[in-house]
Length: 112
Image (tube, rainbow, N blue to C red):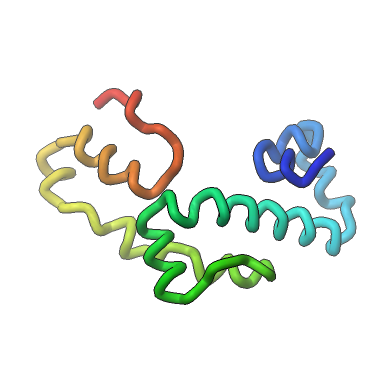
């Protein structure tokens, strides 16, 4: 199977066998992970504003090593940066809208 399959559907890549990954040589695991990380970065870099800002700040335009991905992990404070009154007032549609800027997954169908 292709590295794209690993990036898009890891369970399918491993034929629904969680333990199969442990039988791959480390170099092959890392190659799959790097390829998936590169694919995801290209797809998400300019589509998720906080990722764009983080990549621009750290001057990351491409992923060449697995370690490059660590610099792109959002700080825990980002996940707490929504206005507290949204949560306190149970305004979940606004919270979902805030959360939607951190993902490419369409959250518009989520009901409050």
